[in-house]
Length: 278
Ligand code: SAM
Image (cartoon, rainbow, N blue to C red; front, side, top):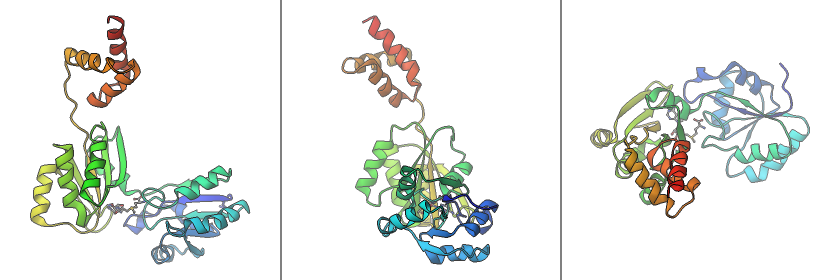
């Protein structure tokens, strides 16, 4: 296989070295350059797979400075790979500005998909997966964290966060305080020797970790959506009537959908009907 010129966004293992794909190995072997966050981390991967391609650091602190040189090499028809320390680049990792700049110039960007902690956690948590929202890392400070959680409280989807061991208890306490009764899965050290998934109500998990102490390792938090309330026809009609007093039919339907988790189209039709018979 010889690589077409372009930027190859390449996923690497999130713990278990054997989760490297055949294609990722080929791409990293054949690229002219591998951009990585930490050369020491990626050097270990390269050693394991006989990858001899030169490594170059690309991260939040030098991105601005090195991007022009990378784009120049891409314009000169080179095949360049970008990896992160683990998992899929750009997912709470550097690379977004480079991909956007390459795309803006019409340069080719290819995906070499593979492990991603968020998806790995979601796939084993037992939470609904038909609709989910990845929300990255929660802020470290309580005030900011509660604000983010408040913004997410009306989202009718499974929420997926990245978290660290030392901050887990505080994060769970704030989830309990802001989101109320939810089921949460703590997916820890996925694909590694001490892989563990603990799933329970957030209240039980707070109690458990307060007793056991903060766990070690890397964590994905998966929070189930709020329970859908069973709204009666009368309650829905009343809510829509109230919303229609100050909003358009479209906006009233959108707000009611956010509140109830029901389909916007259904609520739009109901609101339209109410408006007609006003
Ligand atoms: N881009 C990466 C990906 O696709 O998974 C994520 C990078 S982010 C900087 C690192 C965070 O991902 C960790 O703090 C942790 O929350 C999560 N993570 C990474 N590896 C993990 C693993 N093996 N088990 C659980 N969570 C993991």
